[in-house]
Amino acid sequence: LVLFAMVVDFVYRPIITPAKDLFVFRPGYVSHDSARLHIRYSDGGNLELRYKELVPKASLLYQNTGSDDTSIDFANNSPWESAGEFGPPTEDTDYTSTTALLNLQPATRYLVELHSRESTLHTQTVLLGSVEFKTSPLSHQPARLRFGTGSCIKPNFPYRPSWTHDIYGFASMLDHSDSLDLIMFMGDFIYADVPLYFGPETEDYRRLYRQVYAAQSSRRLLRKVPMLHVYDDHEIKNNWHDQDQPPMGSAMTAYNEYNGLPNPPPAVSGASYYNFTYGNIAFYAWDTRRYRTRWETPNTDSGEATTSDDEHTMLGQEQKQHFIQWLHDVNHTAAVKFVISSVPVTAGWSNFDSSQDTWRGYPTERAEILNLTQHIPNLFYLSGDRHEMAAVELPSGNIEFSTSPVSQFTFPFVGKFKKDIGGEHTIHYRRPGHVKYGILDVDTESDPDTPRITYSLYTTDIHHGKRPAWVYEAKGAHWR
Image 1 (cartoon, rainbow, N blue to C red):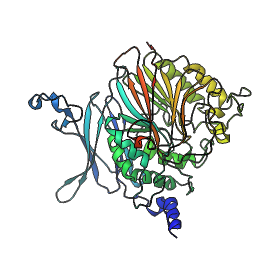
Image 2 (image 1 turned 90 degrees about the vertical axis):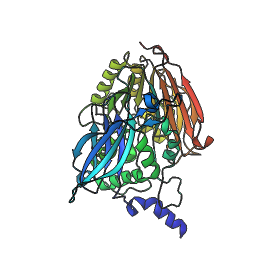
Image 3 (image 1 turned 45 degrees about the vertical axis):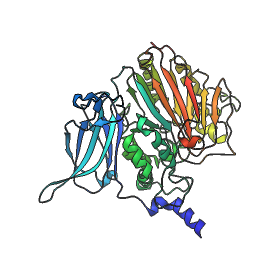
Image 4 (image 1 turned 30 degrees about the vertical axis):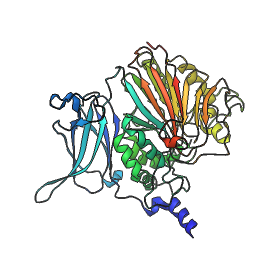
């Protein structure tokens, strides 16, 4: 009976506790002069954003005591500014909205408060929540960036009897959150079809997002660190390749409400792929689901195409051409470039599922892209999806860091990763671990001509996630 109750709790928790009263206030994309803020608030009443700069105490003459410790302590002394009032989110968007703060200063830390203005006999202002963030440096300026990467989460996995479910990977990330500038989450933020598909309606997907955002570690982490997203198959259904067929519309409505709209502006109106910069560090985030056709049949040994087939695509022609133009634009204007893919570029994962769902299943287009990026200095691929970790030097010479799951099941005895195939070189591979994520440190300041890029793997299986399980320093190349 107890076991049955646990199964019911794990499977049906989104139905049992749908988190209808969930409150969310978190930073999304933060540029050098603006910040997108994601809100969920269902109690009505106009809202107001107030913000102020946070100045390091040691920069204030009247508080300069000669101490060298200025890394954390900020003075709350600058005046508040109001971004104005706006109406509350409505039921049409599941009480979510994304708003923007504009005209901010680059490389500056801000405190932002969200207030509710309740009209009674005397108008009352209620503080709902607050967030902190630091704007990025100006474009093309040398920078230091520290950011997290990973994909795949399921609340309360492995299962623990508890009234409030948590996300253990986010709890581990919290140990490093004070030093993170952002987190790049690379898909499977929800599992619409695991362990049970509840249905194709928009509310079926919204419930799952609310369940993730209601977790204690989600609330704490996402209030402190901006998180950017791409989506993958489980935001829709497993191994999705049917483009805009149902339930794509319902799934994308919920995704945009919770994760898509707080992202950087899309490259094309209505699209989900985007690019942005942090100083002279450039990012391009692919959409690997909406435009993909059915896969090719690769050679089982090399992952290469048996015959050339231009009709099979993962990116679609419009996205691919936009990406190629981006490569041209950033080639010698960005010191380091990151390409975000929800599925691995490496052909190393070679079982039946991987041979269809990852870039291994699209070898012609993969070869076309790698042929281009081999000429781009300091370009790295970041991916997730496989519930395993691999660092691979691709045939192009570019390095891919594929890291997952942040908090999900792994495959202790099954799976098939082939090392050093098709011109690849496997630098590191790790299968075990229900919690695995990467942290990248990028330094284009110390030597502006030759950047430093360091990847650190964290897993709670080693050092309880407090210290890296594996560290790799990539050799930066002269890029100008």
